[in-house]
Amino acid sequence: AFNGTWKVERSENYDKFMEVMGVNIMKRKLAAHDNLKIIIQQDGNTFVVKESSTFRTLEITFTLGVEFEYSLADGTELVGAWNIEGDKLVGSFKRKDNGNELKTWREIIGDELVQAYLYEGVEAKRIFKRG
Ligand code: MYR
Image (cartoon, rainbow, N blue to C red; front, side, top):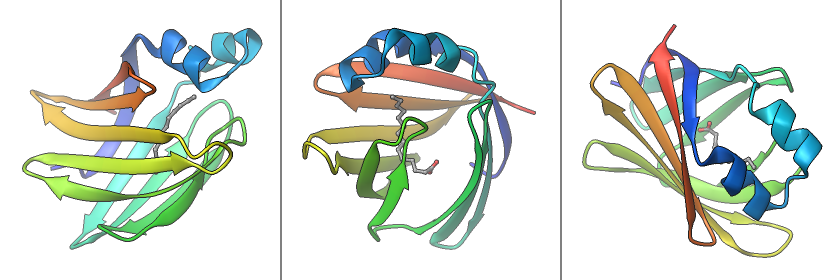
């Protein structure tokens, strides 16, 4: 269901979320127009996610339930894992620099992929359309 090419169409509360994450105003302005595109390929328990944006291009491979490392565009390092819960992909990550939790989940709602993020009680969403 998650397979395919997804382009970000809009975001909710993303600026506030990035602020709580400690991203400075200059980077937040750029990130608001990052043209994020993700290509998701699931093969059983293994996913390949190709991410591209105005900041960078990278490919991430992970297996459900298995911890991996992921760096945000600003260099912040996370470690954690994705799991399936019902129809959702649920990610539990921790920042390596301060140990704080970052939760994220992906779900298909109608013809959109909704990715939510939760950090220090602040939730944001980015909503993608098939591209
Ligand atoms: C993937 O499945 O795309 C790779 C793993 C994603 C880990 C969690 C991503 C959280 C991104 C938060 C953006 C915050 C910007 C300050």
